[in-house]
Image 1 (spheres, rainbow over the protein chains, first blue to last red):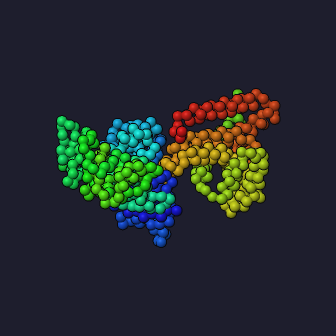
Image 2: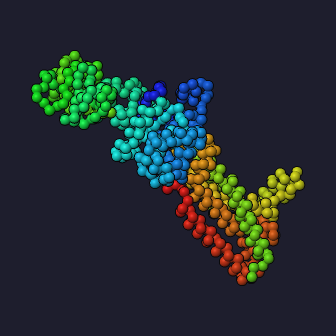
Amino acid sequence: MLDVQLHAPTRAVTVLFGHSGCGKSTLLHCLAGLERAAGQCRLNGTWWQHDGRKLFVPTHKRHLGLVFQDARLFEHLSVAANLRYAMRRSRAGAAEWSAVVELLGLGPLLGRAAPTLSGGERQRVAIARSLLTRPEVLLLDEPLASLDAASKAAILPYLERLTAELAMPMVYVTHSADELIRLGDQVILMEAGRTLAAGPVETLLSRLDLPLAHREDASAVIAAQVQGWDEALHLSILRLGTLQLRVPQLRPQAGQRVRLRVRARDVSLTLDPPGRTSILNVLPAQVLETVADSPGQHLVRLRVEDQILLSRISEFSQRHLCLQAGMAVFAQVKSVALV
Amino acid sequence: MIGQADFTAAVLTFELAAISTVILLLLGTPLAWWLAHARFRGKAVVEAIVGLPLVLPPTVLGFYLLVALGRNGPIAWLLEPFGGAGLAFTFPGLVIGSVIYSLPFVVQPTQDAFALIGRRPLQAAATLRAAPLDRFFTIAIPQATRGLVTGATLGFAHTVGEFGVVLMIGGNIPGETQVLSIAIYNHVEALEYGRAHVLSGALLVFSFVLLFLVYAINRRLPGRL
């Protein structure tokens, strides 16, 4: 039973997010026509499924690319032959071939037999193969879920390039908050085959009524602009509205806009401006909302300039500070990470 | 050492086995595919019917085939308008008998191979714009090579070695229906042990070499691990 509405805009990554068994992969397979549930489905102007008109286009006639969790390379073929399989049927040309091989760094792998590849390599080949079908929409079904941490870290930059460079709608299924934050533009939170909430990733991450904010790795994402780099201190200076952020090590180009992930557990609160402290960033903030989290823990939603931060504090601190909506506080941000 | 009659029987045997194997592959492969992928009520019934020759005495199978293919059987009735008169005691009759008799030996390894591939690579091929027939020939067949080779070999070898069914529906007509196993039987009946030794030995060596080659080659073929 699926009860979900999904609209995937061009040039955006729509993430289907939820626990395993919530129906997100099933929804993706329904979009691909590999499974069937009652409903309607249309790509641009073409109907793929319209129950009212008894219309159901089989998978091989849908202009989509699908990357499976288990890659599903053709084991009897080489890497190049796997890619050619897609290319021949979509009439992709030599230009597309070289672009895709370059994008996913497959040059050295082309001659290898499929069974000799590592998990990360297999997934890169699978992504390339799906791109060579010249899809009008790219569906990714937990492409990193079965990889170890090192392979994940190695393949994420390829996915980021992909989402940045390709002007095609993508639907990305995952249960990893990390992938959601790094790759997603908008998100559909799913639970038991239904939509719990849908909207921009930044907004949903910080909503205290949704499960995202109550995860152990709950985070807010803020946007900032690079102002400069302090060579002597190895610090980047970022501008956040009228405020300044100091971020060690990060060295982007001046003027560039960056997205920063701030974990709720890395933000502590104080009512008085701290005196001398080792914390790099102390930002004046306003409490918007507080809510009980796991036992002994409290979550606080804050506004800093026009952006939202989350802070996870102890129940003890909450009673001590008596935080309420509207109060002015100082958020001490222990660390931030570039998304 | 080997007489003209024995030579004729040998040629006939291999002709029969070759023709039957080709027909078995053409019929058995789609049947195996259907059994591996279709889900329907009564699938067990179909599988049991295909598997019957494995357990049925060849004389029983041969007897029913004799009734079906004989002068008064349904096949003769169907062929009558075209001037036919039943297929018992003819080479085409032997081919029909062999195909039915050896069917499970081809279908079962092939069906297992198809089942082992599963739906996953085929779904992947569908997302790469491959139509159903395209998927069958470019994914299923190449990945099931092991099962197909095993099935074809067993079908061929089993046909070469069949005796009961042939005796029932083909009889013993030299040059038309007399195959090696029958020739050996004749030699033994006539106490020509020397000639029976030659043919039996040849069949033994042939069967061993065939199976040995298949097992040796199969290890190198793409089956799925």
